[in-house]
Length: 182
Image (cartoon, rainbow, N blue to C red):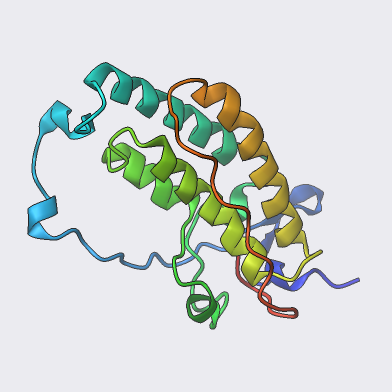
């Protein structure tokens, strides 16, 4: 049987596993000058959360990211989807997100200790894949599995660090037959 459409552009590796094609990075809108305030360590601080709590949250977010990024089915979700892989992806998916984008935000302390924002971005990765790809496709199934792994890791990892509500449920897939994107 032919490979599912979402695998288009992948490379065959030993054991029949697919490796995602290396997509070209797209540029995201840069922050406005008023948002680019330099704070060295205070960059981690939010107005209502003590710095030690923000640092602890940063460590927790990094651990959750590493666990998901290291999962055996994470490869398709690491890099942005390109127009070459899926020409209509950015028409269907209005807010693309990938694991590398989340890592960049973590490295730049853009979450400023917000588990809610981090969790929203992580869930967005898999929600986008489940919206774009046909239900039952390999990429859709991997996204569903990783979303469940993420949910399973969040509660024990976050513990009582946040009063934030859980992220909203994943929207239903937009359609059938599209392929090539995540």
